[in-house]
Length: 346
Ligand code: SF4
Image (cartoon, rainbow, N blue to C red; front, side, top):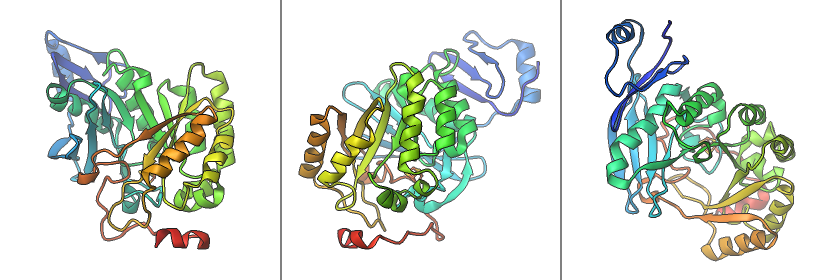
């Protein structure tokens, strides 16, 4: 039997749970490990863990955890507690991000490196270990922390598999959601290989706006992205993609945008999350007013869309959506603002 590359040893209540990532070996030796197996592990396997650096608690109970990696780099993971017992851990998949979405603090960092599957899974393990007694069990995992998960597709599919495996962390596949800015080939692969949930960060209803706020759209435009979803979801039963839509005042929040959004998602089994923009230092956008978000929501709901408003969580401690990370001195460039939106940003 060969034990390969990387693995994660985690202590999960009530016993010892061993996951060996990269092999088909998953065991839960609750009554102790066999001696030969232990000796084989010590010879061939490498125990790597994240090192806890800091925990920052926001006024709404959201916790941001900073972990130091083996090479000294730092990633952030967020625990979002919910009254109804639906506690969520938001994991990172990369150190930084290459996608340069203009509304995102992490995007300002650029990409330093991908995380390994072990580094991704361990964030969820830590979340359980540190907070289950404090906030209750962690029921959901979202890949919405630092990074574009599909830019690191191998490790992300592997990590998601371990999270839902009955010998792994055993989350329900419906409760593990991977979010993408729209990398179409990897999105297709994910839908074919994984039974976890998918979220697509949409944030615009025209290519003109999306090319600016999410430059990945210049490679995979709205029509290609949505047509791919339409085709791929035909063969998935009882599966709905979640569209995330960050509301940017004067940029993507007009009533015409709401109507265009209805047309764009036509024929795609989906839900829509409307998200308040979380300002951060250096950001050029402004949040849409609550009244306008509700008006936008009502137009979608009247047309039969399943639509939710997602309030900001953890924003007073930079733990909210789009606020993770720490840009260094060299930052990804801010793109030219199309002339007709310049007044919305001033
Ligand atoms: S929104 Fe996501 S994909 Fe876009 S820059 Fe931020 S982390 Fe990357």
